[in-house]
Length: 382
Image 1 (cartoon, rainbow, N blue to C red):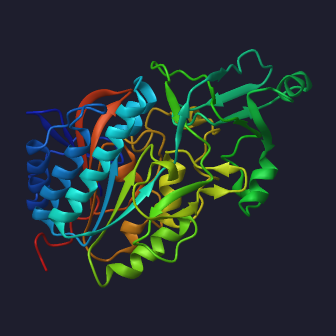
Image 2: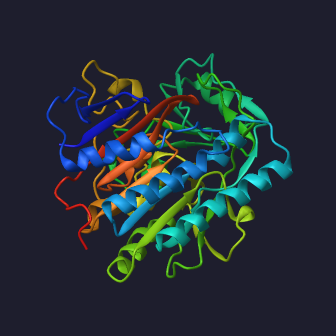
């Protein structure tokens, strides 16, 4: 059973991650240790200047307590700030440099070899795409600005969408299956058609925040040159695992930073296939951590409301209804941790023994959450 620890400053509660039910049992030594880490490091907020230093500080504390061989870190302050705050070019550059400085501090103080991966470039959010008024159904997620699912389109809808100035293409389910090598049995969570927005365009959603910038279509993303033998983000997992037997390694995922932002030597790695490129989100994280494309299960066009039942499993994990398999943390037999200022993805996509993350929704800071997936690995063992 995976345990989740909810922390709202001076109040903590342990729950079953899958059911969300409270657990009143006496804390194990590991649970007590993780509670202490959370209590010492309250989350300052998604766009707070201290947001990325919180990642480093929390990770260093957890390393001291748990002695892992692998760490997965996400630094996302620059992504949220660029997405929702009007910044000058100088402010964005300063924020980028600060993110790299935090990674360098983590690497220096922890002794971990740190592989840095960017999620892709950002661009101005210029033109919204309004898909209301269709005879069919359009589904757009707050996690995706580039993709929207389409269902039950009429001929009139197709006429409206064909040649739409904001759309790059409308791809069918069959085209997506062919692109990623799937069969009909793999298409149950794919939309009937998928609308793909052009650069600078985005789909209107129910988000309460006004977009300032959004992820640009990034067909390649940077992976620091200290990881060799990678041509795609799906190569990162096995390249890291090959080194973990010899040294302690961390992945630092820098959200909102692409090839144009990197200040160190890097390899430009494929970030999807053909016209389909990942945005910062569940499918990109899973491509990195599992070494495979998970577009069939995780994509911007699925009707997630179908999963929103009264007893939905993993109620604290967003759209997820199951723990993904085949992750790097699951494959690595040693101790592992994940820390990041990106909700849900730390504990659901990395497979690490312990995950610490902010608990924030729509930029509202509600505290912290930690998840313990494995309690059978001794603390502090060599």
